[in-house]
Length: 124
Image 1 (cartoon, rainbow, N blue to C red):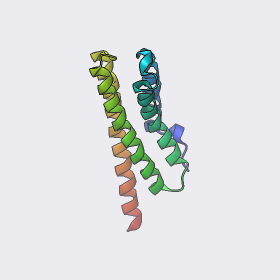
Image 2: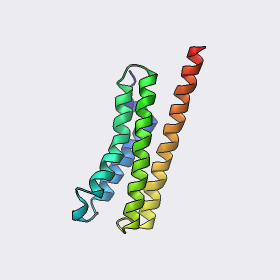
Image 3: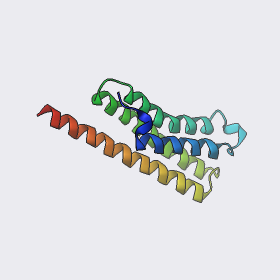
């Protein structure tokens, strides 16, 4: 079992989630149960799945939860694009949040690759 709070990827994804929550406060009220809720759920799913994977038994399960987190980060990317296209996000805000999301995805990819490499090494 790993302490998820010590992982840089968890810290970064948690900060991204806080920014998504802050940003979506300005979305139209009619989006509260639509895009606002979906963007918030997708963003919070990333650090949630990292934390859950850390609480599971072994790296294979952690890797599975990191892959779920990757799916949620990709979902968030789309929600941010939709919000920008609907005029709910300025180009500057969209660019910043999107860049953070892409960075989190890169970090997830690197972590997943490391776990795969460790599994291969251990299997030899």
